[in-house]
Length: 209
Image (cartoon, rainbow, N blue to C red):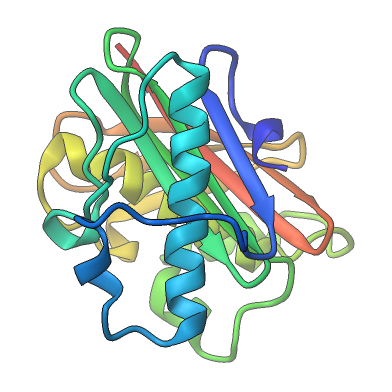
């Protein structure tokens, strides 16, 4: 699923459900030592996806430790992103010589819970959503996912938190979206792709070198 929204040159791997064969490095264990079984399984599975994606680039398996604000730490020369939602995990990585930033997100294809859209959407976001056809995927969920992908691509470059209301998005029915970051930073205009299927919506934002 995640491959549908990524351009050529980016390595990705995904897994439906949780991977019973996935294991953690000792350095990763402390971060889920007190986690419930579901959280531990998701944490382990998504890292197994990331190591498969790295292997496709010829990189050896290494510990992938959460850093500032939980963003995963990647090996030198690599940019990447991870995501998981109930029943699905995915990771994408790329050479830093070719890509400045990368963000992916997966969500269930269902309307957002009541009140969430009010928290994440600007008036301009709502206006853009209202122009989309009512049939089709859950547009509000795609908006949420796209903003998550924008943040994941933007944060490693800017090293500051980006609120949902600090990025303005326009979704298109052709599977693309455009984002404009409303605060100062190294990148203000971003573009991405979205896809829906198998009960999921996935989004990705990539920033070229």
